[in-house]
Length: 625
Image (cartoon, rainbow, N blue to C red):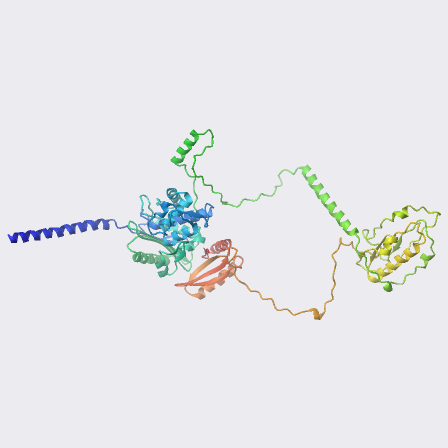
């Protein structure tokens, strides 16, 4: 009896063990059956040439590689003016509820877009990526539709998106081929933002975040991006980019078994790419996406039909519908061309009116110039002791005439210019005096003055101004003193005949060019050796300014030796001296080599420099602040 009991117990234990083993196998088989398929794709970034591919067009789960498209659209929206880096984004409950990896955002919290971009690109935060999509398109489904449209425009034929973060969802699929295309567009379309993928840590506003790709960036020489991804359905994914010398390679891997295995496989593919890629190749940038007109959705048609039913307006729009306008200028307006010979002549009336306006302006300017020349200046002091001897005995013997003749003081050279010698009218008191008897006209007296080529008009003396209108033009102090003496003698002789008309005295000098209107005072100073003072030599100190937007730089290569990097800086500076004359060359030591950079540039200067260098078949990339 006991034997039967023990035998039954042994059989039951054996059956239990078999059942447990069967259950374990049944549990493990689906896991092995659902292992993520493997795919890879390798291209030369300069030309887009395919260097290697395996299962590259199979639609697989992209996981967080999706965030590459989210960031591409964010950069595109910033460029088009739809949003800015400093725009404050309010976090929704939906975005805050995303599972890790996440930044830890709270519903209702506001944060700048730039921090969301850093968190999505570096930490691969799901809540940040969802918030970016909602900020740009209003909702995650609308943003997912835009992601798919953008993928079509970029040539990603086998990609469809359902969310902004890459969590596994029905219909959310892509390929290794498409993700390599997207990585190449990120590099060429937005070089000012591409450097974010090479950062190992960054400030995300609410926290300091570390890169999910830092192990590969540290281990592979020349690596500078781009994005990792992982879900249980996708496996370990990575799109990596690296540059060595003039070569740049992108490799995408789907379905890695672990982080270490994935990184090792990507390193093998990049080494293969650098081995196959030619040393020199013509850079062929991919074309920017061109979007076709979008068809109106069925929901919008229904909403507009309802709006037209409740209003009589012909242009009714459904309430709550969001209309986004792209107001960014895409091309510079073409200037208006010059008139051709065959075009109609301008209106004659307009030409006459324009000519009248020009004539009136010229006449007004001439009147102002004449008024300035005729205005009196302060009297110049006379020097009687320096006056030249003048015989004035004839003036004392001459009786007071009824009508005085003009007194002219001139030299043999000729007459002064008309504007300088224009006679002034006699005082009104002289006009009221009638001559008692007819007297012979007073003789014209000519007094020689100094002969000079250049004369300057002088003001009338006070004595001459009270007795007679005198305008004096002298060449030097001696001639001026002589003229003043003559004027004083004439005034003294004319005093007995107060009732007679006062003479008009004109003192003329040698011919000279017309004086300028109201010339500025000229100060003449003698130069002596004592006046000269020794000054220190001018020392010019140059510094690269980082203000006013000069926070951009360009990278012209990564090299194994510092000497090679310095040689490249010198060569590029000589080739592009016009665009890089205000930049400073700088060698940045990194793990595995040295970067040759030019710093202290504005964004426009950096973009222009890279365009010119790439046209010369020189590798160049823009590095933002």
